[in-house]
Length: 289
Image 1 (cartoon, one colour):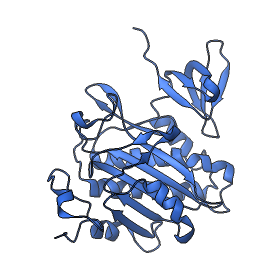
Image 2 (cartoon, helix red, strand yellow; image 1 turned 120 degrees about the vertical axis):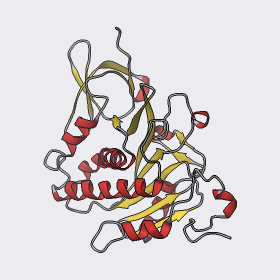
Image 3 (cartoon, helix red, strand yellow; image 1 turned 135 degrees about the horizontal axis):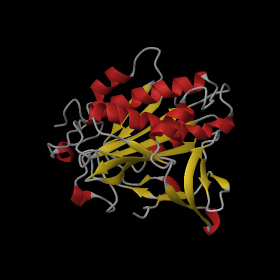
């Protein structure tokens, strides 16, 4: 028998781990779907390949503010086509559909994944009670035994001409022996005060709604909305020596000194020349001493 609070299609055998109860769909809807709010629908599924792929495929038939959550993703993706997998009910796997509209120039839509990063870090810090930081452009970091670890990430994808799907994946109760790579982390491993996924999800969605409203009201201007300042304040990459692995196999090593108006990371090389990096991978390098 499937309980009332189980995701649609869930079977009792899929939530036998009492440390990882299912999300309470009815309670989440009551807390998130409020009149006049951004969120217009919320669906929780037991398992899917990718919540982002599902929302992109269905975008034309959905209103802005659709939220899709999966208890398990079997083909989750991060940036640069990296895979993202985790045990069922061990994390937050959520995608949302946004339509920035005519009030926000398309050239400013590139700020949406950075906005999602600020919102996710803010919401998780509030609800989980653990320090969060951001690694440019879209990684969520926690500290585990004094070491910086990736506990989550953001993926933004266009869905037709007028929509963007934002995906947020967070490791919540992942145990050390379940980590996909040695450098990964989770809220539990970072000694979070709470790992209850229901309030965590509500907090992230509320922070995302707040930041999205501010950004849209400012016409997508990252400075006027406070987004650029907030991202820089929470970004662990700034002030660090980094290696940017650029498209085409090129590399750039230097100090990450700023975030420009387009959301690009500005890296100052050994010769003092400042280069904006808008794509590729960035590695935090350890400094000597």
